[in-house]
Amino acid sequence: MTPRPSRPSLFGVTLDALTMDETVQRCLDAVRRGEQIEIGMVNAAKLVNMRHDPRLAAAVSGCDLVLADGQAVVWAGRVLGVRLPERVAGIDLFMRLLAAAETEDVPVYLIGARQDVLDLMLRRIAEQFPALRVVGSRNGYFDDSDQPAIADGVAESGARLLFLGMTSPKKEIFTAGYGKRTGAHVVHGVGGSFDILAGVTKRAPLVWQRMGLEWFYRTLQEPRRLGKRYLTTNTAFLLMTVRELVRRTPSAGSANRSH
Image (cartoon, rainbow, N blue to C red; front, side, top):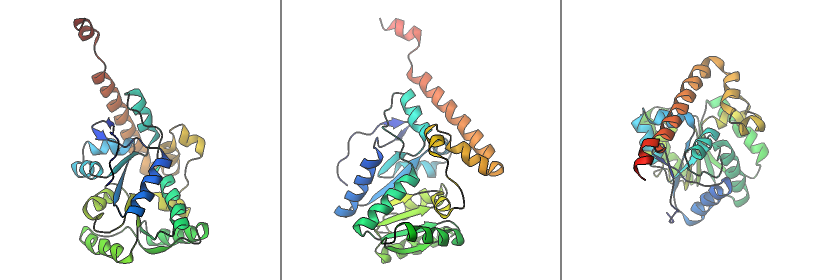
């Protein structure tokens, strides 16, 4: 890997303070140089879950790039004095890299979603990026024992970009355990992006994204599945931020004693 600038820490997690353009360039440089980059994405929910899931925390922290996927993470950074230039949404990075792969003839491999969703997404991608070279794909439903063979299949395909459309912590654990074995120069976990590209779920309008309400838009689509989860994790993230702010703010008494 090429040297990288100092990285800020937020809630004990080391992040890369990159813009979307800088991230895309870093990925393309890795492909050109034959380096391997594993990308970790964090949003409010994942930062909360990392505190209770050591495997997830280790997998994310072990990535070569760790990016702020959630607007709430960027806002929390501002409150806590940690500068993150902008949100680098996983689906937007996914689309930017697909476009670059088409332009530069970089082979890609896609793993994730149900088979019917994957097939639909592949058709949509073929329409949007007709010259894109997809050298392999498979659905995201497999046992842990299947992971070595899947990684070897990616390596045999010659793919340089690997996208994992799976939920956490499955995609992070696969990346940590087998990302290098795939031989892909960039491994990017894109979560539910396959469902969005297939048209199975809708992404929040841009104004909702900018307001940090993408989670609420998703909840409106799947209230029973996501309502309680987002309420719990968002509340926990807010409390985490408040506690960290209190911890970092000197008390009046300590400030007076310092004079």
